[in-house]
Amino acid sequence: MTNTRQTMTPRRAPRGEYAKSRETREAILDAALEVFAEAGYRSGSLREIASRVGMSEAGVLHHFRNKVALLEAVLEHRDDNSRLLVPIESDDGAAVLRGLVQLAAHNASIPGVVELYCTLSAEGTSPDHPAHGYFVRRYEYTRANIERAFTALESEGRLRAGMTPRRGAVTMIAMMDGLQVQWLLDRSVVDMAQELRDLFSAFVDIDWDAQGPVASEEEGSA
Image 1 (cartoon, one colour):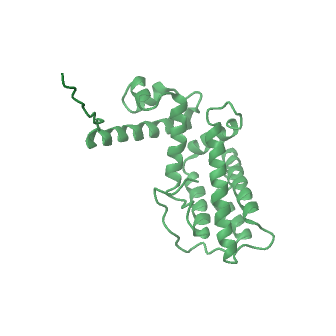
Image 2 (cartoon, one colour):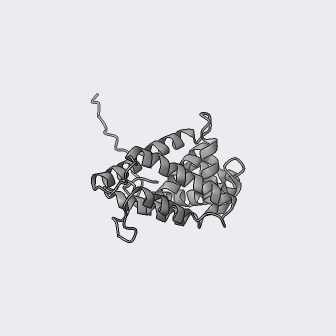
Image 3 (cartoon, rainbow, N blue to C red):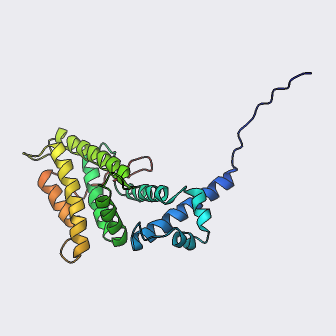
């Protein structure tokens, strides 16, 4: 008897099916971001998220294995939106700082998302919180790239005396996060974008009206 060897070819989803799945995931992420921003992560339910996209909870769990996985994807989704304003991996240090100011101005239009981020970043300091790993990675990534932006400005002779790239990065992140908390408590007291711009100006010689490179989808988030 002759044995016939068969080569198994993995089934690939048709392009139309893949595109539809991707659109569904995007819709779920947008809905989850809205729900978590309105009710918080713990109170925001999968049922409400599913309802907003016209599907069942089982349908949501088909794309995201559980609520924790969905939260992680939502945070990454937020970063995807932020990268459109901040070319965080650009070699143009001034463009990175201008992008951060633009992001601060944009955040003033989405208070629910800002509140969600502030709450989760504080809760995420606990090692057993589902967002702990995300925030550890995010702070490391953001700190390293802002430090690189300051290093580029230092090489151009634009960093003011007494400031170092490392100190600038740590200070900027503290400033951005602190401004968000103050703004959430009383939006009439703090203009996040203006305060951030003024602080940057105290550290570096920067032309705020210059046009830097546009952020691409391949660049990281802020």
